Length: 227
Image (cartoon, helix red, strand yellow):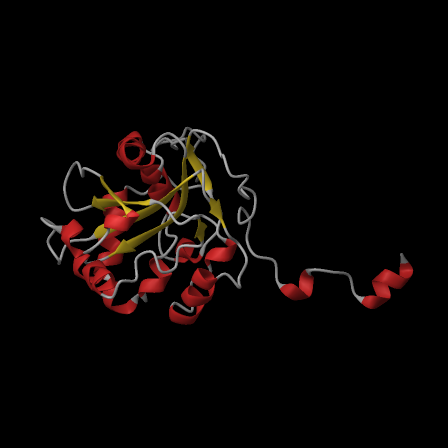
C-alpha cells in the first residue's frame, strides 16, 4: 500500500520539497473547474506518478484511492483475490463517461489476454463515496444508474492477475487506442498488483520511470570508439 505523507512535517522551519498530499476531492474540484480546457485523454492514467497527469494534479492521491481497502474489496467481489491495476481515468462529468459507454468503447482498448476485468466506479462528489465494481462484460450505460451526469466520476480499470497485460504496440487493442486516443499509450503503462499474486507472469517493472528520449538511449559514435 502507498504510504501517506503527514500533512505537517517538522523540518526546523524549512520548506518541504515534497508537498503534503492533495485530498482527492480537492484535486477533482480543481480539474472540474478547468474541464473545458483539459483534453480527456490527459486524464487517462491520472493515478500514475510517471504519466502526464503529473502536470495537472497530484497522482499519488488518486493512486492511494485505487489502493484503498474500499476499492480493493469491491474489486474482489468481482475478480477474486488476484487483482492488477492497469488504468484509471477521471471524467469531470459522469455524462462524458456515459457517452463513452454509448459508443461501446469500454473494453475496446484493453490489451488483456484473455480479456477479463472489472471497472470500479467512484463518484467523487459525496463525502464518503462508495466504490461500485462492475464486471467488464456487464459494463454499459445502465451501470451508471443513480449517478448525475454533471458530477465527477472516477473510473478505475482492473484486470485479474490470471490474465496477461500485452505490451506489444501491434496488439489490436493498443493499435485502436493509439489511433482513437492519440495521447494514450497503454503499452508502456506501469502495473500495480493490488491484491493476491501475479499468476500470469506479467511485466510489473516497465513504466516506473520517466520516459528517456530516444536520442539519449546510446553513446555517440565517437564515444563508442574511445571505449
